[in-house]
Length: 106
Image 1 (cartoon, one colour):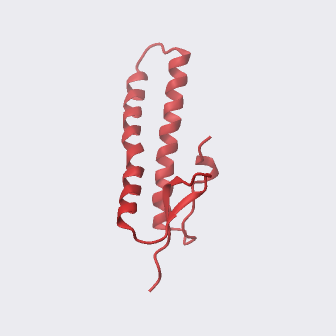
Image 2: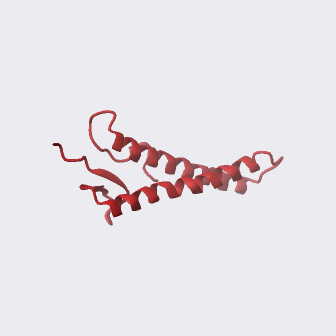
Image 3: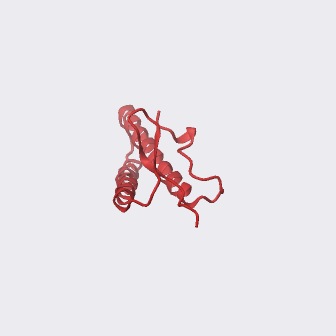
């Protein structure tokens, strides 16, 4: 019987390296799942604000800058969660992988 593949967790070590769950620890896996889901709930709020703001006739540069920054963060969060979940599916057969450089935080 093969050992389960390590699960990439949605946080890093103090020095910025990826964290992996190497064994089936239910408590840590549950915390990881909640941590993955949390930004997605916040992202829905950002999307609702963006939807409301797009009908405003005139937005200031500051408002547009703020909106773009929040949308960037929301997209980054969603892509990170998708990559974490995709790594667990391991559709490529290459094993777990961290977030790609394109979605790494600035």
